[in-house]
Image: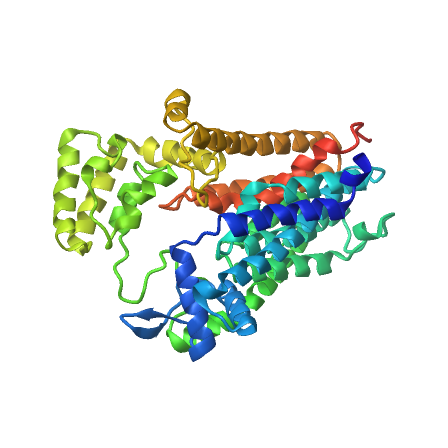
Length: 484
């Protein structure tokens, strides 16, 4: 039995079965799914990167072009579009996600090799492969047409190159002859490949350059200490230029078609001339931290009635404040359109609440958002409530729902605990391992901090960090004895 589970093919087969289960049993979609499909269909049929606005094909820059390009390719191969092509899209995502599992295993083996050149790498490789293949949180996103699968793939590939780059920076030279060929690659090539991979990832997720920023911080700490500040500056310039290279066609297209300099998708995904509700978003940031609350206000704006009695009590410091919100919403509910005046009223409320309790807005709520996006059952795509607490009441309402939700919650906590344990084991193996650990930790911290600034804290946005988490978790199964 042990020999069976030591085969990578068996792990990949198990991962394939899990992903097919989600694809066939729980296929899903979201508002973004329809938008991506519409852009891809227009791109393929009308040769315009556009969406339908008032039944007119209108050029947009609301989403990065990577995922619509993938959809358009599937549509061209299958001669189907939209919902009719979703099964083929999901099956292609299954293949990409299994490749990501292999990259996660490779990253885990590389971390073990950096820490100890005599480590039994296959043991770590196979442990990471099983952890990644059977992770339901990443697997179930193969069953929805969204960018997470590709973002995870390119992020993991870039992390492999960046970990090697950090390892090379610790050796003070542009080239190193090492015992292992994989540790002897040229520094500049590693910088170039990692930057290109991050650039490709940016075509799917506009915040992907945060990974480069994390690498620059860690490389700076290493190279400046070695009194090689100029080398650090040259590395940043090289990586920034090569990361921008895949974005040039998109940037040129936006300049020619939309007459704007926009190398990334706009932060608020607004159409030209559309009101960006900065005031409402500022007010939401003074109380909203749970994902389920986005269904009560932000995702209803300009589409549905917003009921003040459904908004959590923490959104109001006084009864008078609740009455002010009720008056604004009463005006909004008349025509279901947020006006500039109503948005300005929310902005005033946000300023007053922030002045009254600044730590709530700038510290406690961002911390709560960070905890929420990390410690969640991650059942957004599954037909379960996601309610863990209170345990007794949830069990009484629906024991099956509570069992699945609590089980996934504990599994998520288990992955995080394993990753922390694995990181602690690596950290005790100086001098090379702390650099790689610092890279992964800085990336996770920067991305988490960025997510706390968003008005809709969706847990799926941290799934891009899961390859790093799983690679660290696999270190628990490495050789136990630290090396000098």
